Image (cartoon, rainbow, N blue to C red):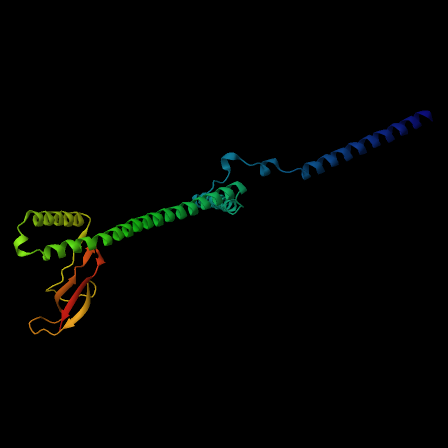
Length: 224
């Protein structure tokens, strides 16, 4: 009896061992089926697809576009306070320099005008002296025209006129010329058949030009 029980027990143990071995093989087969195919999933570097020139160009264009967008974003960024202050001071300097330059030019023009007006004032006071010299020489008696005194007066008068000419003062032509309202001041009008139309026939007071402006108008008599 004991032998039979031992044989039955051994048979049962062997059967359990065989069942466990079959279960282990089944699990191994399932894992092998579910495992990824290394050969199919592996990527051979030599067999990797090469990129085309068009794809390279598109990639370069995309990079450049990205760089330009970054540059635009950097340009659109708010300027620094220090840069704004520098720009403000520079604008102020430019305005001040322009104002000073205008002031300098205006001051120079005013000074030049003051000198010109001063010269005209002095010359206008000298003109009556010239008129007196001319009247004196015109009224010298015939027997005294060759006298040393008359000769000395003429020399002083000529020297006077040379200095006036050097200063830019010249006499205005009047007698025999056509009346010009810009140069002459008509104080009389006469009918004269021998004279032309609007001809100056007599000068009562000589006129003078100072450079390119009238210093004193000629006082004249106009015919016809």
